Length: 364
Image 1 (cartoon, rainbow, N blue to C red):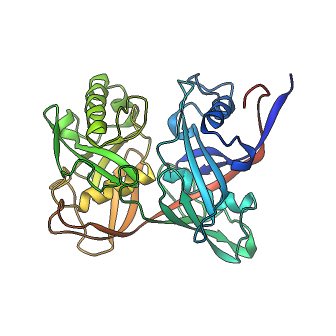
Image 2: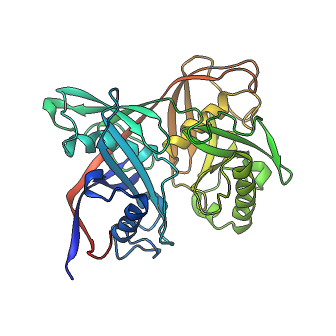
Image 3: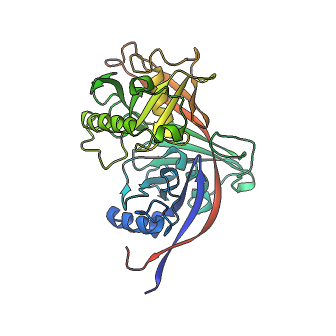
């Protein structure tokens, strides 16, 4: 039986990598999409040797793009996290690193016309309904990938892609603080449940028996740490109104420590069953909001700049990620209103190849 060939554009977005598909080239039904993606990525085998996945969470992601029906949006972006070890696809989270490639990919795939200079691509994240503007370098109407911008976790330099996030409070739960508290105590440990761009459970590294400055390999080898994280994450998921999250990567988990360098805080981000090699974009926005919001577990750990918008640098295993946070802070975190006008980040992206991925013709 012949194989089925599906057009795709492979790109690095931020510190992640993914094939970018046109929604029109995939089934309309989510279950059918999942079957296609499992075959294309080689899910269910840790090395993903029978697909184009990279064997870990940051390289087993998918972006699905389409022209938006919303008048103030150019492109709809549906994100899919494909599990490597299990034949599963999770459509519940988003990914801000893969988002960095959406603007360039939309232009490359012909979803919109580029301007001469900088093209602003208005994106709706279908997973969370967040709105993001991606400012893409397009001299002479062509996407420019080479440049002097550098992000930690990616070798070399590239052209900058500036992302401006709007409408990201309560991305999944509809609330900034899904439990109604700035601090909850689960299994004797204080944590903050917060939902901005990505629902997260955030704790202090010291309360989990680590310094928070350990390398990714050292943390990933700590079985007891992950057992504690997962036990708390499962209970927090229920308290946040997300139900049974044992098979979902949402909420994500973060641990904070005092910064080692000039950053606002040192943090480790979990995906959630392994440590992120750098830091997720959506997680960085959520973490940054927890730093400036009074009364969270971050209070007393971080070094906050006095000016607004707040330039916040979050130290991670391979460097730091910078967030420019334009927020109005309430005097009371629970009863007051936290107004997030904009969260800006600099990312980079690169086109890797355009072609077709082949899957068994029986799948669809």
